[in-house]
Length: 90
Image (tube, rainbow, N blue to C red; front, side, top):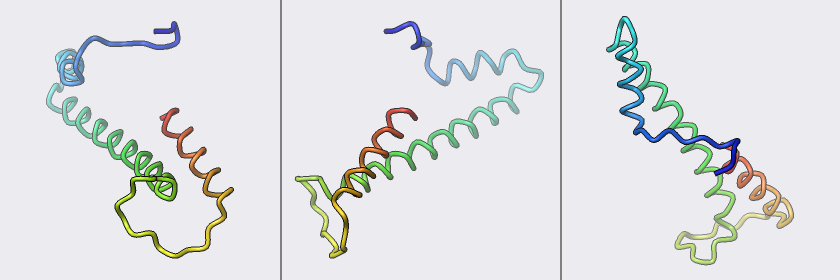
């Protein structure tokens, strides 16, 4: 692991409980934590869906029907690269 990376050897639930125990309103903080986790999950799901959509045209094992659309291969490749970068940086 590089110096720029960090690792917290606790589960999310444990971190949330430790932080909640330090608050005046622990239940309110837990609710905030659950909402924050839901938001982050929703955002990462959107990023993953965009990557899957960009990869669909290149997937050799696809089991879905290919719709007839005119698509520029260079544009498809560029979109896939952008989505891949977004996923890695998310």
